[in-house]
Image (cartoon, rainbow over all chains, first blue to last red; front, side, top):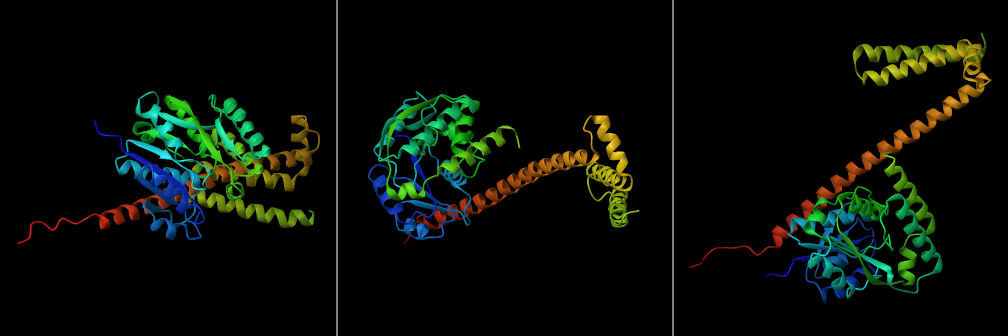
Length: 226
Length: 123
């Protein structure tokens, strides 16, 4: 039996500083990596082009949700059996991917979701923890899905799940939308412990607390069909 | 007549006539034009006969005609906000589809160009 074709999708926006390190670390484990440059204004695309990865470039910035969907479409067109989404700010550990793929490849689930609260966090500020926990509570009420981590960019989808996934919320609210679609489609999902490494860089690039409120409003408006 | 009525009534009448013209020509959806006609007519009546708004307000238990107008404007504002948010989302989504299509097309073309070409047997 041939090994499943795994494609790693890395959405990147203005990540010239980290993209080389992220892709290089991924390369030690996986050979098919797709960087989706989301209309960066820095040298992300130039740096990515020098790396052993395929680069798909949005002519203008459309947001992480849009970049993920583009990467998933591209990976499906390339015949991926399993698609892993992986953030480009250096917070994720490539070593976690294996554990994420295991339940998907064994057929135990359709989607594996990374969870920092089941795994570990390094240098996580308490304010971030509070906002993320509030997000978990909000998702449990609104989306009625029992997960321990909502906005974790490390996920694995089998081909049928990836094919039916359609991210329409272009910006950061896509994480909630993915959970909504998992729930609505009845995909089998499993949370897998992962480690998130917070650095000054990733914290500066990450979401602030006000954005969390904006995301919540967007999710509610979407739910209301507006 | 007050100065406001001298200015407001011709203006609203012109807008009413414009909507009527659009209804006859069928340049916009019929429902939209009928709503516009209703709004201009109500505005015309409210400007020409302010006492009518007070009567309607009392009928609805609001009290003052000015309050009725404020409530209606607030409701119209909210509806407009949601309408334009919906339009913004629609346009944004269409733009993303175009951007995605361009990105995928370019990437697939680059893949085709990079693929080793089979020149067939030589010699």
